[in-house]
Image (cartoon, rainbow, N blue to C red; front, side, top):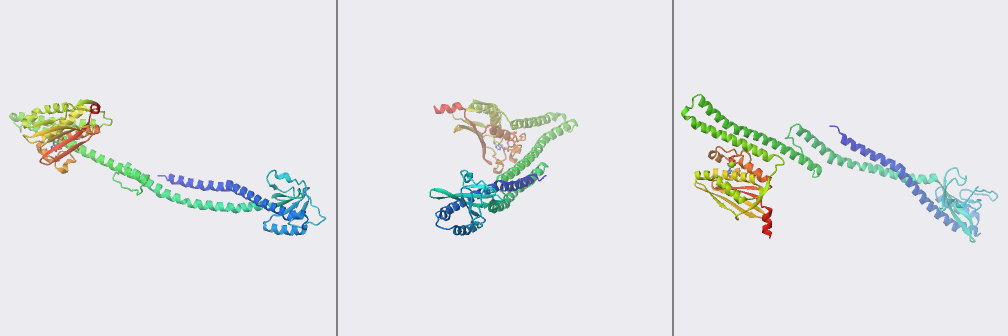
Length: 478
Ligand code: ATP
Ligand code: MG
């Protein structure tokens, strides 16, 4: 198996790291720089305005000398990390530079000085009309005295300074990215523990199952979807194994049930042929042979019926019919057998007519099988009671005998194919053990239930339900 899933996840993880890095290097870096620029411009502007309104204004109101202001401003600029404070005349003449002393007769003119260059904002970025070699941020604040703009306080700060500041912040972002990246390793660990390892176990298990090892056991101890998947898978494997077992048992049973009548037929016939059974006895033994062939026919028919019932999409031909009438007819068909065994059938039917909605022929078969069992396993001179009761839109049909009964431990198994209790084997040699499985399948196909209540040595009762016809419901409601 290729470890592609893990690899893909690792690639995704790396991509996350790379894209994170690219994002910080471009987008975040830009944003930080812009933010620093804006913030610096604001603080420098506040500073410049302050200077314009205090020291510089004093200068123009002739309250102080240029020298004093120069000293004050150089002290201030020392606090402003690399910033230069200039005072420039509207004409562009440099009056004061905090970084150097301008002698009286020296005239420095900023060529092309134009205070409106900031156009709405309060700063400009550039070399300040060629005064610097590197880019600077220059913030303007007018000095007004006598209602006139006398000059401008301009504070210059090299852009490299701002960038250094921004880089400081950016480093924090990189550090955060690394921390995030390492922290997201937790996701990788979770993925490995919660998804990858269980998935590998599940895949291994499916490989084992596919190769036929249905007993392979594995467990994924988590209560999430993975755990559920694993549990479903092992349940499925169990079911398949059980079905295989059932299948084997079924074939073994079928072969066994076919073999015994065939062996006896073969035995009797060869004995007749080689004279071991004299001709005058032939009739008796041919009778036995006939009986055995009847049993084989019954077995084959039973298997065919079961197979048809099991077939997926078995269609029931549902119709409304009178269950009471069906019960009466079925009981009547057993009249001869009952006479022989002196068994009476007592019918306790609710109402004269009881319409149900079901497949008529299949329900007939259910009644036939149940009644057949009841008679087979009843003692001579006993009574079998068939009763119908209605409860919550259903009709319950009970077939109750006082025959040999079924031992408690066998009651669960009576509906299984080929099941015949030991007690019944002596009483009924022809039985195939398929009758009740057919009954169960039919009732199941109707979406209904059948129950067996029995006391060993006392008697047995089978109760099954069928839905009432819709017309009966509306009759009641009226
Ligand atoms: P077949 O129906 O093919 O003749 P069968 O009657 O033996 O064979 P089922 O009808 O499936 O098979 O019944 C299975 C077993 O359940 C019987 O062999 C018998 O042991 C037990 N059983 C069923 N009905 C009764 C009953 N009314 N009283 C006692 N035992 C019963
Ligand atoms: Mg039967």
